[in-house]
Length: 144
Length: 413
Image (cartoon, rainbow over all chains, first blue to last red; front, side):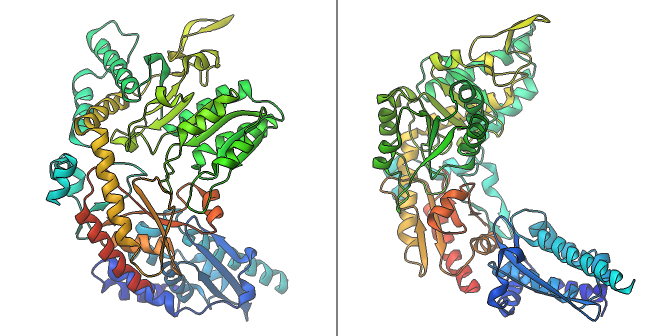
């Protein structure tokens, strides 16, 4: 599926929730289901620091596709990570760089979360795009 | 509820009616505002005073020869009179209006600090200071090659007085500590802190941002050299704050900012500065803020600061008693003498998640480090959830808060 298709799918899922409590409860559920990273990945160089929560992000590139894994000390942020990973993981660097992640705005989370410095979400999206950029550059270098 | 009102001579329902914002609903729930240590809501008398200023006598002050400018100037000066009486200063020249407590501390660091602190000197602060009472001194110390020395805090969140005494030395050029901790609610023994410093002639700044709205502050009795606070945490508008300073100190200090109003005469060959407090108030001041602050002081007087203190004490004791029964919850800051703030952590859970979920139930609390990162490090925690009370909060609200918190913890666990 393209990033856009996945984003639409997520927006659809969220449209069934009436209020913020339900939306957050869903994120909590997703967060709880997320696997932990291997112990050695919880190091400072993988840490994306927010003011109120921290995120650890690792990336890998296989056959031209970028795969992400991440964890957070906040269950709600972990739920958001699950959504981001669902959209971005397994895509090409090009697709990751071109995705505007409009779904965050569409499901109303942008207003609640992303604009504040209170969590690592915005910083994490930026970091994911940096990884994609790095892999694109590395890929091009390889080809040439 | 009724019994509380009678005991304290406080009619909370009547008070609540004066704060229009308390009628708001958030996410379908009546709003419960427990972030009063960050800022308080404003009562109608304050809101009305500000609108009345703009509707009736808005003008630039001190230079106008026309009626509304004179009225505005009078209101500004009257506000200083009120502040002076409110903290029991002796003269209005001891009262400098600033943007807030942060600017007041910066003023002292910039002006007094740069004049009096030199290489090898020390500034003493405590481990529980707000960033506003850390960073200005850090910058000063870096610039002057002086040393920022930190008085440790014990596990209960109290300043270790024996350590403080040991740290005081002829190298100390200033002691700067908070009256009440914004994160822990600890009421520090500021009188004793000042007395000890004065024994070896060291001036003391007290950051009273969390104190003036909760208890009677008497700068004269405390013998504080500098005392700072913000209007917006005491029911007044944002953007107005106060620096109290002893006149003998203020007179010797150089200006902090320069421009209009702070001068007596300007020639290209040189400028003669105005007297205190004008010397420290460059540019058009915040007249609206001064008018609002004046109304807020009247408002506090109308309830009585001792009534406020007693009532808030009752609220915090009630909340603490209930909250500690929650499994896995630990209160951070258990000082013997504390007020108005309950900070806590819940085992295995993130404060941010708890705060977000409480918001979905209409409850406003603060989460995180509360601008006291070194204090969080001292306790080895990433942050806390903080509920802080004001004069309009009720035991009913605390009951709803506790039951909502229990629900939230269940969802997150």
